[in-house]
Amino acid sequence: MPDQMPDTQPQFLTVGEGEAAREIAMLVRPAQAGNKAPTLVWLSGYRSDMSGTKALELDGLAAELGLACIRFDYSGHGLSGGSFRDGTISRWLEEALAVIGHLAPERVILVGSSMGGWIALRLAQELARHGEPKLEGPKLVGMVLIAPAPDFTSDLIEPNLTAKERKSLTERGYFEERSQYSPEPNIYARALIEDGRQNRVLDGIIETGCPVHILQGMKDPDVPHAHAMKLVEHLPADDVVLTLIRDGDHRLSRASDLALLVSAVRGILRSSANMEKPT
Image 1 (cartoon, rainbow, N blue to C red):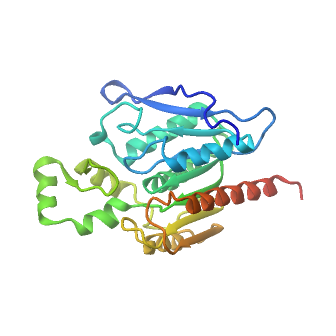
Image 2: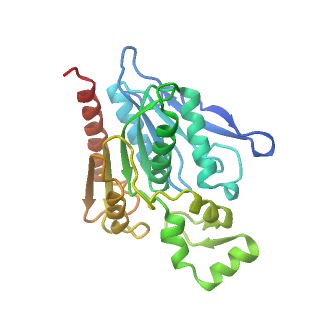
């Protein structure tokens, strides 16, 4: 497989103005000359970054196939600036839109993990809103969602808050929760939860206008597989494939899981290539 990282130096893009300005780190793999295939865009999960196992696997696939690949860190994550506690779905969505707008790919495949799946769905809505013929913008040709967690703040966190956590939200503006994946606790801010209600996608029909492949572990302790099945119900107009992994956890980072991720992305690429062929 070709070198996964021809240029390890990230680029930085300033998003926001004044006190809201933050530097967003990006790692951009250009396509090989003459390769017109869609650009792969990686969207990380909550407290994850662009150097994770799945992100590197996606970049490796791009290197193998000569595709362009965009990875970036949300503010408060990885190499990007900004405070993690200031993070909201709206803020991270703004950053994703800014990165895509700055790099201006013609066609994209969004690959979102956990919260990145929520960001991907919101991106699809925003790209559709701005993708009228008179406006320039990338065409969304496919999505791969890994243990997607749309609306997780309102559907998975708020209903399960303890009295202690509710008190902490009221008095401190956040609460902490032990993480299975880090010695540092997860921090959920009141701003994140309140903003999450404004970004709900599971309150009506979602029209992405492209094929969607969902990978979901059935032993996921964070996002139950019933949540993925609920998402499918909200995608009635799209070509949706749901792959349930019987012994899969939330991370889906084992070699077998990564193979499924690569297979799903390859499937979307084949679908987009077939759509481009003249009838």
